[in-house]
Image 1 (cartoon, rainbow, N blue to C red):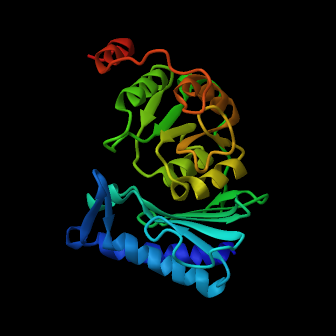
Image 2: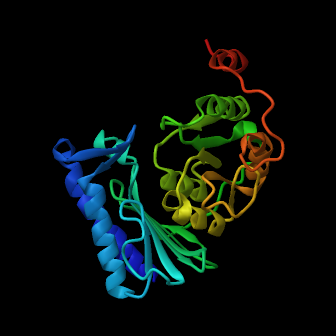
Length: 282
């Protein structure tokens, strides 16, 4: 199954790379404020679905752009697809985006492929068989001191996002770590945690297609993934936290009060001005 997913991801990557040669000619539409979709997203998704269903016509499909309209509706095998994670980066020519494909069997992710076409980096994982970047076995980082860690995140961009809460979360993490990064493609963020490039990741508002493949990469590389309270059943909860085991536990202690699943609600949220004061920024 993993080989078919790789074939699909590479076919989608070829479409993306061709379009990247003249990105200004790509037709763009807007699903909602700051949430874009292009003809490349649709073409990439179409070739992925065609490749998967040609090999497994009895499987289901859960894709970002077409939802569940393709494949078998009642199958225990469901392919979860993000045809172009990082669309906003792509349309600006910022080369941080990827194809993400996962296979869930009875609700549990068992196969994962994330393909970065601009770097020709292929991340793969099979349940119980480890995670790989190209031919290299992946392991999460070994750092245990949070102040030495590099953490990635995603900034809020939707009109209904809670900007004040996110600024508070970012402030709490920034002042305890070596740095905070926002690459702009959650699937790659998770792949980078699995590879040990970063030590942890957190974000809200994510959909299953954003995190399904990356979550298996992290766990197969020895890391942990869950919601902000540390619960492992997070795929549909729009909260994602990942890291090596030591860092994960420390991030849970910081982020749990901000979780909608936490029994301890946030007592007060700092304003942007207070945040700048606490972090020492000028």
